[in-house]
Length: 282
Image 1: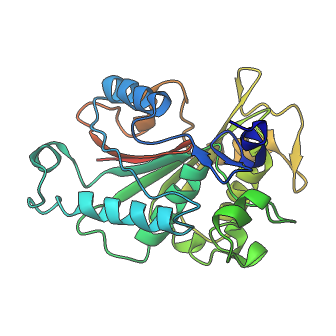
Image 2 (image 1 turned 45 degrees about the horizontal axis):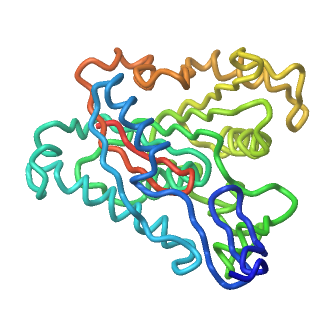
C-alpha cells in the first residue's frame, strides 16, 4: 500500500479520520467496549435497564440525522408506556413517570436536543425529570468549529440552535425540571459547558441547574476561574443555594441523589457512538 494512503487529511477528535485515499475511519458504536462496559457497570450499580441505539453517522448521514434517529429511538421506548410496544422487558421494568436523559460530548448535545424537543412535543406518557450533560459539546460564542462544519455543512453557524445554545429558543421550555452539567479542569470543552450553564440560567427556564466540576479532586473548585465575570465557585454555590444536587460522576447510583435513592429505579438508556452516550432513567 502506498504510504500516502495513510496520510490523514482531516481528523475530528479521536473519533473520525479521513485519509488522503478517501477512506473514512470511525470509532464508536453501541458495541464499543468503552461505552458498553461503562453502561454495564452503571446498570449494575444503579439497578437500571439500558437500551443501545446505532444511529447513522456522518459523513454519509449529516447532522441532524443523529438527533432525529435518537428522537425516534426515544419515541419508540416511550411507546411502551401504555402497556403496548414490542419489548416485554421495557413494558414490565420501566417506570415512565421518572425519566432522566444523559449524554457525554456530542451525546450531551443530542441529549439536550431530546430534552428541548420533549418540552414541546408529546412523549406518550413519559415524564422527563432530569438531564445530565457530561463534558458537553456545544459551540463557542465567537467561531464555528471545523468539526461542526464537517458533520453539518449546511449549518447557519453561530445562529445554529444545535451548535449555539444561546440561539436555541427552546431553552426556556426545556422539558425537564433538573439539569446537571459535568465538567473537567483540563477539558477543552469546559468553557462551553459553562456557557451552556449560564445560558440556561438566564433563559427563564423554571427548573434547577447545577454543575459538577472535577478539578484536582474537588467538586466546584475552579481555582478562581471566571466566566462572564462570575467565578465558577460562585456559580456552583448559587446552584446549591437553589437546592440543586450535584452527581458524583464515578457512581452510577448517585444519578438518583436527591430523589430518594436508586431503589426501584430503572433506566432505558441510549448509547450513541463516537464518544457519545445518552440515556434516560425510567
